[in-house]
Length: 135
Image 1 (cartoon, rainbow, N blue to C red):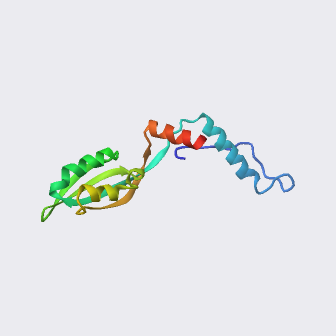
Image 2: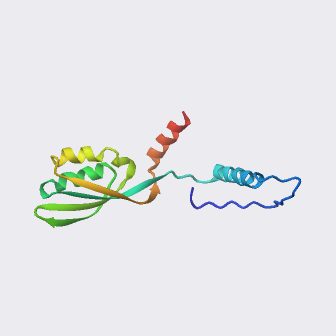
Image 3: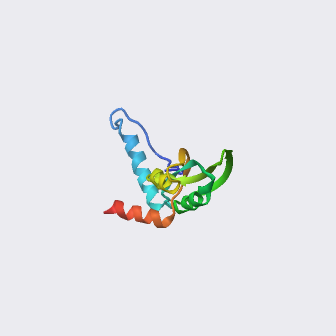
């Protein structure tokens, strides 16, 4: 959870009446109550992806990245007929990306990825995940 604040009021510690778990329990209950009335957005990790491919496959790989909800941020010629494509792609879309890239580039492409940030998941995907979790 991000951007949430819960304030406990009117709490006192007594050596006889209080336990070590009283305040964490009160905090957990307050957080649960706040979550009921909050707007909830499911966040997903987004990775920065670098794809190095022969120039002949640039168009196909850029199209494939867009089908994986990727946003291409730029391309760089790397010399000797190769291009580096930089993109931002949700991590869940990268689970089988190596197989697809190998197929598209006939084994001549390679990619790496690093964590970039979290972003809200599109509502139609978040709804599907929420329904699966409820079952």
